[in-house]
Image (tube, rainbow, N blue to C red; front, side, top):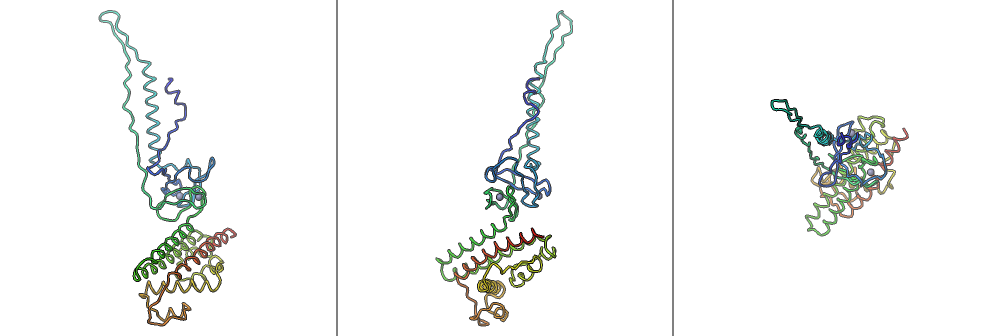
Length: 320
Ligand SMILES: [Zn+2]
Ligand SMILES: [Zn+2]
């Protein structure tokens, strides 16, 4: 049984990557599917893997997909069958009858049909991320995720990438015609505020269990800054405005109010705006104006707010 013995009691089967070099993974806890590019993140042996969706941590060996396991088993069975066929071949014999009318005996080994290899294709995912902390390349469904290597959540990274994109829209606005420029500036304003909203919501949703009211923390909106500042104080005991001077905070409030007018009132100033925005130039019934540098200023302030919020929420919940 030389051929079989040579296989040993362990067969290593390399799992192929997809065309971009990614390997599919499946969380043993939530069954979520994601992909990583091995070798791009943390270096070292026996590093654990973090599920990007539920945060479950386990050895990399626990994250094979069902298709990969079936593929590996089919290859292993193929190898064993081949070795077995070769070994059995040695037992073939053919005794011809010595005398006429005698009985001849023979054994002929017919190799069994080869087991088909269960090939598979990795799935297409929606967001590809390069972790800002450990440089691992991974891809996931949806947008927000934990890094499978270092476990860092990507919410702040995604938020900052969105702010950068809004900055690029402002760059475009500078070389565009007046009407297009106005629209680009308004869209950039809208985009950075909805990015802040998405980021803030995700952050609170993740830490909801550690707040004073988990249901409320899960459904928080970040579109109304004054309100959310108060709510964050109640839920996590943190002050959102700490990151900014009071003048800066007022600038952000005004930008949020302008966005509210543009989104819901076709940009025409109303009583509510005058009351809430602290804009001394505002006249009811006139059109609001928003300048490119105003949105650039907002982007910088949101960057500060974002990193401060992320830090504060995490340290507030670690203490508790
Ligand atoms: Zn999971
Ligand atoms: Zn990472």
